[in-house]
Structures are given as C-alpha cells and as structure tokens.
Image (cartoon, rainbow, N blue to C red; front, side, top):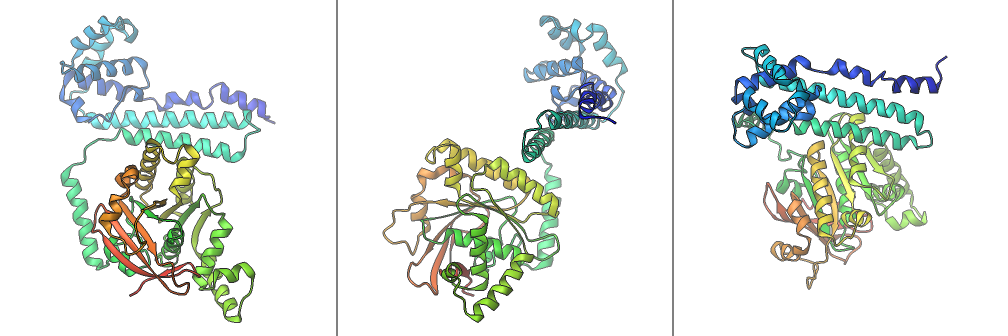
Length: 459
C-alpha cells in the first residue's frame, strides 16, 4: 500500500513536473522564431502577445528576448543582427551557435500563420505553469499538514488565478473596430427588442432604475453618506431586491461582505425589512400575531434566496475576489457584490487617510468588477460639512470630496444618501447621483421607513 512518504517522493521525483516536456512546444517555438527572422512584419502581427517567458527551450527564449530588444531599438530583425547581438553579449555559444540560427531560418515553414503558432506557445506555457502549481499544491498538502485546509485552498486558487492573469495579459492589446461594432450593434438590437428600461441588475426602485438602467455589470459603484443617513440600509435593500426580484434559475446570486456587522445581524436586519416588522420588536421579541405571520413569510422568501453573507469582519480585496470566484463557479453566475465599508477595509491595510492606499484598494475593487463582470457596490463615509443634510446639491457635494479624489476618480457611479431624521414610520431620503460615467447625474427621492430599515419607491 502506498504511504504518504512514497507519494511525496513520487512527486519530488518528477511525476508531475516531468510531464512538463509533454506540454512543450518545440516545433511551434522554432516556427515562430524562424518566421520572424524571415518576415519582419511577423513580430508586429503578434501585437506583444508573446514573451520570452512563454518559451520552454531556454535558447529560444534568449533569441526571442534579443528579437524584442532589436525591435524596440528600431533595428532590423534577422539572423545576422541576432547573431551579432548575441556575440556582443558573449551568448552565441549558449544558444547553439550560428548553426542553430541558420537551422531556424532554413527549417521555417515558407508560409505560416505566425499568430496561431504563437498562441500555441502561450497555451503550452500556461499548461506548464498549471502543472507546476498543482505539483506544489500536491507537495504542500503532505509537507504542511499543520496548515488549515482553507489556507491550502486559498493559496492554490491564488496561484491559479495568477496563471490566468498572466495568460490573459498576453492577449492582443487592440480590439478591431469591426468586431466592436458588430458586438455593439447586437447589444442594441437586443435592447430594442426587449423594450426593457433596465439593462443591468434592478435596484428595485423605479426612479433609480430609470436614471441608471440598473446596476451595470463591470462597474464600481460607491454609495456615500454621513453616519446615520441610511447607507447600510440602502445597501441591504439593494441586495434583497436584486435577489428576490431576479428572473431565471441562475440569477439573483448576491455576495455581501460586512466589515462592521456579523452575518446574523445582517440577516435579522433583512428580516425586519422584508417583513416590515419594527427592528426594536426583533430585539425584544414582542410580536403581534400579524408580526409572526409576516416574519414567517419573510423568512421563507429570504431562505430561498441566493444571498450569501460573508461571516468575516476582517477581509481583504484578494480574499473577496477568491471567494466570489468560487461562489460564481458553484452557482453558475453572480449578479452583485456588496461591501460595507471602504474606510474599514482601508484601515485594515494602512491609514484611512492614506491617498495611495485608498487609490490601490479602489483600483483593486474596480478590477474585481471587470474581471467577474458584476456590479460591485461599496459603502463609503463622507463628512460633507453642509449646513443642512437635505436637500443635497450635486455640485456642492462634489466640491466637498476633493480630499477623497481617489474614490471619485475610480468610481463609475458615485451616489450620496441623505435621509430626513424626522419620522420613524415614513421619512424621505434623497439618493444623489453625483457622478455616472455612462449616464446622467441628478437625484431621486425614496420613502425610508427607518424602523423597518426599508426603502421603497415613491412611484
């Protein structure tokens, strides 16, 4: 029977890594190099998609590096200039000498699709990287037995994501306008045929949907406000509306992360909102028969929803990314990511006033939205120093956030929430869209039942 020591030794002897040769691309590498030496325009057609690190054979990687250097200097790229450059660096012998360069040229196919062979080189490189990572995971599982299983999983996923990033970065830089127009026209036809106002994820508020066309995939949305204005309540309402009003078996998947409240606290707040039962009653347990009926119905609806609440008040963008990728894979889709809040996330990793740290996290969140193709909504605290909390003026508000330029600059949509402190039963709240990269700015007025933590449309 094979024991752990034997299995580990099997891996160390190259069971996994020895298979790297299988994922080499000798002929494709030679074809690419030979073709570039014969046709100077072949390198341009690769559009920077190929790098020396993608080559399995070290001499081929050296030669391609020289090709890049020559091209960058505007010098001719051919067997003679490559040989001369290698001689100057005393590296000609290490790549097999002048004979190897000559062999690359003479054996190069007379006519090939250089991009096809370059893509093959890249793909084989990604497979080798994947094999190496898997071998490392295999080895660590036996050596790092005291490590928590979640740490193993997160490390494995992080390394695999790095491979995906490297592979995607090496794709062609430019998109053809003909392809873009074809895709754009198809989207316009679909929108025209559907007659739907909402092209993204519904907010659940008609007035807000009319201005934004819904929460758009790939966008970073900031909801800002002073403490006590209802930011967290609005975020919770958006989560419930997106999940409970979703159409389709694979839709309505929502990931919520709070650095301020536990998952149980958020669940209780959602229950109060959905049942329209006073939050204070949930704290005291004093319910009427009508309250019980409403709570039973609301708990059933929420239990069947696809809202997932992260139960960790200390989490980084990288961890959010990892967990959301897994959630999207398991549920065959993801519609919305919610984070409460930005300042707490920044404070975890540095000073909340550090503009560079704010900018770094904002860029990471924006990258997350685009990579997963999902709206990412993040709460942020701003102190406006305005005489009255409402009504708000877009220009006045924007003038007050210059010290938070990284937030404003990276946000696709920037909203401010301001609610009337009077009236627990039915107050008014204004949502000011101070910035919308692909739409109008303005404001909408919603009803806010503070004791239920519930926002409703006025229409």
